[in-house]
Image (spheres, rainbow, N blue to C red):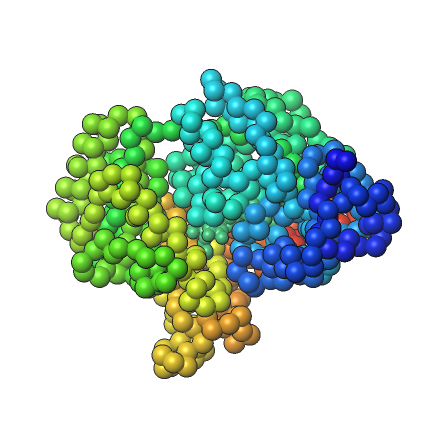
Length: 484
Ligand code: FAD
Ligand code: 2HG
Ligand code: ZN
């Protein structure tokens, strides 16, 4: 008999009593397997759901949503569960709808480069698939081996190549979405231009599972570049990082595909991490490191550009040292240093993560201010064995004005959190930055949106939420303040 959907452990009795009680159509698994779905990637947020549903189609999900809607059962949509703001796990015992069984590629247009796929497809699997046809996914992130395209769209993930390929608001062409009442929006068109009515898909991009569950994605994929160059530089100051960014744009602007920065504390955590071994590309330590990637269609042209850039950077004294990857293996090794930062820090301790947009010239002031704040609160710099804070790292997508501050601590402790919040949010608001550049609001920042958005905007968002989800059943407690 065909299975209806996978339900793990004991489904809520109210759900079971209303769903066709033909038990043979359910897959009931052991309770310990639920941990994986209740706990987030950082080990910071944990729910206690006893019911995980893995639908296999939009129609199946629609039937489930309809039942939940009629019976006031709350739901958490879940993709690869790599989110960093507590949005993908239940707060209490909400039903988890995990999309991993919806993982089929529906179509790929080799002429236009448009991909239509299920929301549960893993980003890296999609990238490998379109690579065979000479294309690439327009986003790339360290979690690519686990995160789903539906999760990426729901979170409006940015990542390492945002600088070149832009936001998912531009590359997503259509979405299939199941609404809280079970209705299905069948919007999987592949048109690049379509001005018929409101562009509803934009509302779901970055809505973090609060308006509907994305079951299908149509996305434009750019041609895979023929020539990719990657260099890593060591620099002596944050001022030099900024000047280098200006120079790189001047010399390689049209082929620039990534410009990432990593400070020394973060770099050292990765180098000393037991998670994965990395060869330090530099013989001497530096205060700052940057990764510069170019992607183009002509190797000779790009070689020449990179050569001119290197000469300029060395002659002007902006960089102290630099390495240029010579082949694909070296490219992977340099990228791995950057991509393994979250995991290496996570191995050191429990990590408080702040993901902010700031004017580039103010970015490192915040990292310095956070270190000082931790010292003032006597959680850093007291004595190595006793400090609650183990490392403060600053890194990120500097080309997009996006800084990540990671504070690794001995635990998720009130002393640490009280030192960091609202201190960081107030700093960001004072320079008119954003408290969520790319990770979203989730549970962590649902009540903090006011630091970056005005009251009228927040009220409009609440009203839109009520249009799609009048009963407030989809991803409750997340994204928007619960207070009126
Ligand atoms: P989940 O974590 O499962 O969910 C994220 C949110 O989307 C939740 O609110 C969830 O309810 C909702 N959701 C998930 N699927 C659906 C769906 N089908 N329909 C509706 N709602 C849904 N983020 C960046 O922006 N840039 C980065 O560079 C980046 N790098 C990362 C590196 C690492 C090592 C890790 C662990 C995370 C990183 N992230 C990054 C954070 C994270 O946002 C992304 O990994 C990814 O976009 C989340 O996808 P997911 O499938 O894991 O979604
Ligand atoms: C990255 O850029 C991700 O590596 C994760 O956005 C950042 O862990 C973080 O804070
Ligand atoms: Zn990031």
